[in-house]
Length: 471
Image 1 (tube, rainbow, N blue to C red):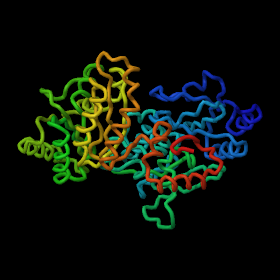
Image 2 (cartoon, rainbow, N blue to C red; image 1 turned 180 degrees about the vertical axis):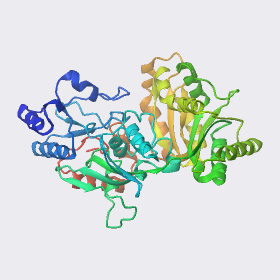
Image 3 (cartoon, rainbow, N blue to C red; image 1 turned 180 degrees about the horizontal axis):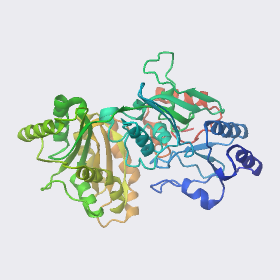
Image 4 (tube, rainbow, N blue to C red; image 1 turned 45 degrees about the vertical axis):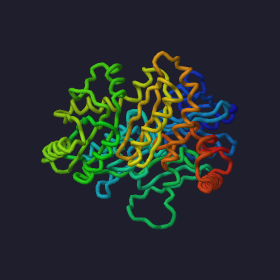
């Protein structure tokens, strides 16, 4: 447990008001949004600068106290939650919330790790630029957490993952040294690209305190469309044809089943079906262009040709920003409405795009056989191969009875993912949830390289121990 003398040392660094030790104050930092992981901590420490982060880390290194970095506490795999020992320090980075620099000539902005993603987006908007990372939790999640987990979101098909949006990082290492690598260069071949070690490492190798992120021109035209399709195979064919015809104009290509739309219509007041008739599957499509004109006309022509070719059953183009918002509300509500339908067993996986239809079909049949009456909600970012394959509890089955099938269902789904050369974690990370699974499925040589990097950068294992890698 943290001693009074040690806590006083930390207070001297960050200020008396920036350390929490009372149970009621610490409680929101010790449980994650799905209520799966609960932790205990010696204190919640809230530094206000990179120098304070470095000093806190150095003090923890000297005392042998392990640190759990935390941003907006929106993670879904328990990576931001401390263990039950009560001796770990939660390092909340939300006070590091400044824009340090905007450089339009290099197309970059330097931001601190505690800024919410929405605040980063707004800062880009204020200089008439776009920061394209977009997630349902963007009002709460922080850019540091996004980078620590290599977040994905709905615009990966156009702009890439969080890793693709960064040129430089500032990182506090396990011994308290600051790796100041906030470069803006697109070309820099001076050895290893160290930033990619820390992006996606979930705070186990270093603590990200700032980043140089890429800015993009704001689209001058946006078209949002809701399409009815027969099945995922037709959606893939549609994507291939659209890429050939309109290429880089595709910002989002989201796949949803009818059951997901029904859940949203049931539980979201004011929601409505964008199409007149029901369809087995849907695609939410967003197209963008830097040209102020013609995108709508091009989109209408393309949709007409797709209808004639039998690639879609019906389509609706948003005629206003409000209509577009309502279409996106359906997609963004899918995670929340599952909770209102009872227990669910969730998976964040990716497979090659061409294999998505067979993966969904095979996995659906297998899990329904394992849990008769189970309701499969498979949705996600078809444009980048990321599917959230979730099983909602059968009607009438108690929640705990459904959840008791979790391990078996996980084995089934992940086995089918691996047989399709896919990944057990597409955008949520490993954290605690998939740590044991990673040890079973990762290439042994790759796993040992990962452990070697961890030992080199954090030999005393004080940075987020128990996450990502099995000790």
